[in-house]
Length: 425
Ligand SMILES: *Cc1c(COP(=O)(O)O)cnc(C)c1O
Image 1: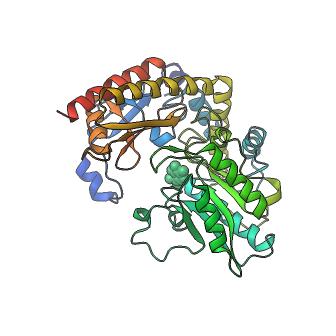
Image 2: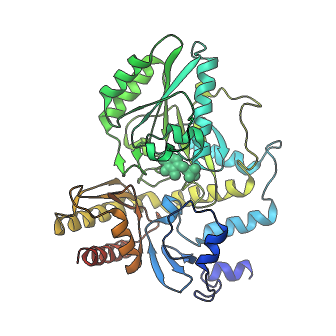
Image 3: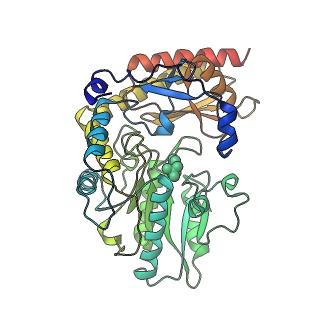
């Protein structure tokens, strides 16, 4: 199919339902690392997806807060089609024009001064952890045992260092020994941070960094508290501690602002991005201020990181967010969704306790006193043609593409209400 045809008619890909999908065959060959829903998605357009049976779904998962511009977006199709024909990969042994342009855009639109590119959120956080340690060993009075404080219920990825950083035992179980040099505090609790800093300070052991999500995504869609983050920033400044933000889920416009930290009135020294950055093309990035940019040739590297293909895609995503005023849509749709979700909470006061979130990352909490789980409702919603994701056993997460329309939000809420009604029958 020619590019022209594709651009004119993005849905003219192979017909839905034409392929039969063999689940058993899949399970025979692919490692069983996911509890999968019993559908196979075959194509998408905007906020709609179709499975191999030809059933249509409204997509409020967006590849878990990743498909920023939805599916088959014209600008993204055009960029990746042209880029793959021109140049898709060369080594970082050479200058990569698209990488430089993307880094410049990010620096001009954030508090970061320098960017390192990789391929995923976990890798971006690994890079941040390595940068913190190198800074501690080379700048912070040559600190021998730097400790990174992270929050309970946080999520930072699935590599060994990032499951250690993740403050949830269920992700660490069976993978001992974990990486040394991490300690945990409750989120949004300033006293806990003050106590931890004092407790850890002993000989050559000291807190070198505090790593937090501006809003905890995986851990239940919990927004950071403004006063807490202001105090954390001050504590970091007073004690030579680096402040690291994991913006993997909340960055790139998801919250209605370009970066999550803009909601908190503070700037991090280091922050990471991945999920939504290239709208679904794999990429990760770690940004830092100039003063803590202690990496030098040989310190860190990635074969694929920052290749022309992923960088061109990311630049198009960011420029489209700017050009099409997408942040405005995120704010308006976010308010609409939270208001509709609150209405649902009022209709089912025994089932739900709270709605919370920023922009287009929102959570609805299920009453802890009842046996209903997020998976019960997620499964029922899929039956109705709405894709949503759990954020833990008791929270429903709504993270549609940032281009979602008013009508699509209304429709999603109707489908959700239908699903809830069915599940409690
Ligand atoms: C998803 C996520 C990660 C891990 O990203 P991967 O690309 O899956 O490695 C890290 N931190 C946060 C906050 C995330 O939401």
